[in-house]
Image (tube, rainbow, N blue to C red; front, side, top):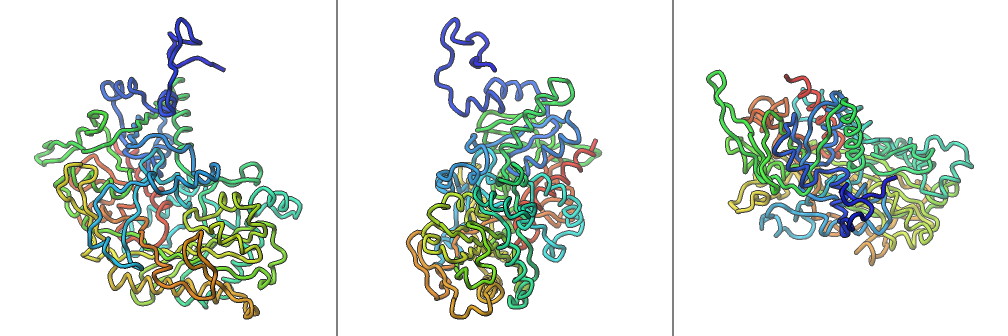
Length: 588
């Protein structure tokens, strides 16, 4: 094993000491990313087949799919941020939970005063971006449902077919496993008990609650379907003793390493990644072909100098709103960009029911989890919602505090230590409920505001319409029907349900339902639809994922959504990106 410094002329402190103050980013640049020297060479001497902007789910999906088909493909990934976390923060020591939010979240837009001025219980802001290598993949909840054909109503049939064709491949890449299969091999009581001593298990609690919901599904009047939560985890690690939430940094670094080995043998091309490189504008020129004027992206204007596009295809894999901002600032000929906006509004409900109210309560392990995905819709408008239900049975909250936090299925909607501390004799139900915003609301927009910074010169406005409010009412009532009807033991009337009120760390349990202002979260998630995909010029992007009006720029991610639905978007984003990769691989 080498102990040499980065310079062959200063190895081992001879003839003089080598570098003494390397930073973590410099180490990563030396081993994995483009250093200043490598970046200079890439800009001045190399050509690429694909230039991918962003390093999240879609960037990984595109690079992995393309290189698995053609290891010689030349790919440059440009990431605006630096290296922050090596993997999902929930896989790291528990103190890393404090990295969620704060400075790890940026808002590269101006929020309209009309949005901010909404009273409590309404939409007041849109959650921001994670400006680091791996993007949101390091801080997400990992729920990955396949939307049904009905849940993709309003989408072009061609895109629905493409998504369904690639869902299986996307699940393989993301390691998606249904919650009721994570521990399906733990049939022997001794093995189950052994694993339960190291982490929570998905066992009897998961099975029994799914059975109850199947028997009582009609008690949730707006329910359309439910299933064991499909979670992006590395199942089967250490013979079933552990699992980890999925994120892109490790797979991307492994891909860099693999391509470097192939390149050394002449069997592939290196995968280049540049970090700390902000793309501020894509430059274009007009080319006349067969008497027709075509717009071509010719260069990227970045914070680290201009990058020549040449014959490369540019892939926008950088998140919905930053990609739209780049399009608005770079391609004035593109019509309708930013005129449509969707997202998901949220209700959060925490409840508990005594464990001994359930016939199976005394058969649970010391620490058990359940995760169930419940979908529904407003019967009138057919607007969708879904409940991400996480259930925790923790018989010793003080002892298992770190384990519970480390393994909770939903990292944002989770039970706090204060909520668990007095609930050692209860099942704690955590409901994160997401509803779709009406894409036809003319009051919602994302448009330029004339600012001087091309990465932030946009204004976002989003307001709830009457349709949205009706959906919100439906999903709130569906949540209470789920807790008080479908999952409440019929013989436990004297052992009632209690709800948490107030701050997660300073509130209290009471039998009252939380009020609208208590349960409705002001922040939106899963923004989309600003560059929606459709036939020809009916959308902003055509059915080949090409930006209308630009010949060599392609779009991935949630901005493509014609209609948002309520389902978590990551699996579909990855599936469509894999389809894009295969489509471009076939082009001459």
